[in-house]
Figure 1: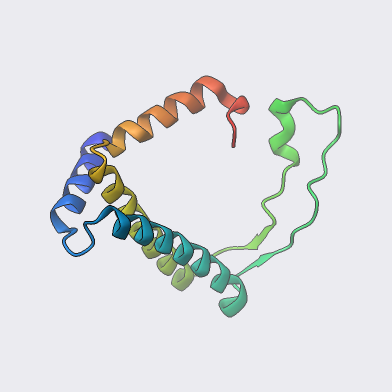
Figure 2: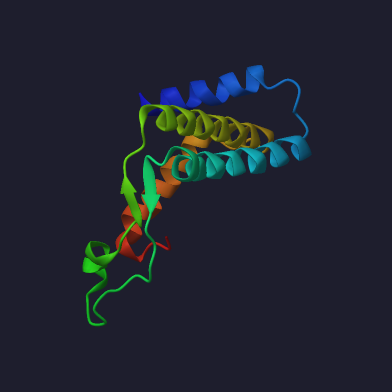
Length: 131
């Protein structure tokens, strides 16, 4: 089911991407959409205030096992997205996915295969995955 949805999405992107078909257009639109995701998150903090960022150095015991490190790491986020900010951020993330799928199409790469391979790698490497 998930692979079907991913494939249908990628196919729809192929069908409806008309104006920006050049690799240069797709690369620049992907970068622009990433910047818009960042801007939407920033505006949730600076314009709306529904979330706050309280950032400081990550502190954790030096002898903690890697498997327990996550419990000591902070997201630096406080609050929760309001409905309006959530809607905007979801729209921007969707737009970003659109151009990611478009890039996959140009290189004849199946987006589901990319997701599946990353999932397999993540599951195989676990906490040793570089993230």
